[in-house]
Image 1 (cartoon, rainbow over the protein chains, first blue to last red):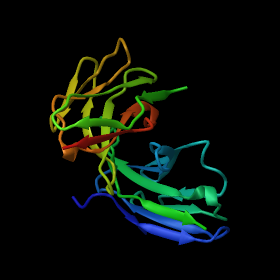
Image 2: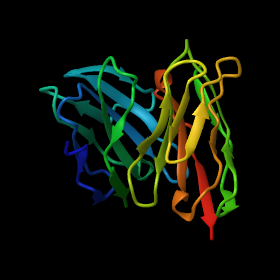
Image 3: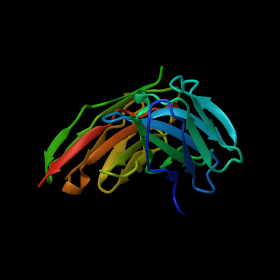
Image 4: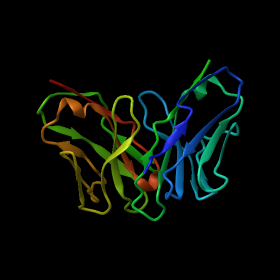
Length: 114
Length: 108
């Protein structure tokens, strides 16, 4: 069990640029979640996948955000035309569908938009 | 809508003190309940869970009991250590929502 891995761990970009984060879940987990966390706050749900299907998206996820999980394994989260308000830690978590709902988190990808 | 309410921090305690962090929630049905912990510089990790009413989850000396009547899942520890300093998050599974987190600072 190699755990959930995220890449890159830290991204600094200029406003208006596009960024993409990758998440590799635990291999036997069919559910994958993306959250955003800002300083002093809990994780805010963005979206989740069961296998390759995106089953739920938060109202927080504007049109500039898109997530994919094309083969039901790794996932990408892309943010287009970044804004300073997008600066946050982006967390990925995976879990087993049909279980008790326990989530296993990666260490996160920190985005800084200048 | 569904929500989680945690007591605000930081909670500052001396080593060996008793800890309670309150958590109440609203959710549809009776979801599994979780406490996650985030140590400085690390990702969130599961601390303990309870899957049905009256269950008690426990780990590392921490305990929490699933109280259906009060929709609560308060976290307790009888004697905290400096190494318990972290941020603690309450989360009922069904909502995919986390509390804002409660920072615990334990001094020697």
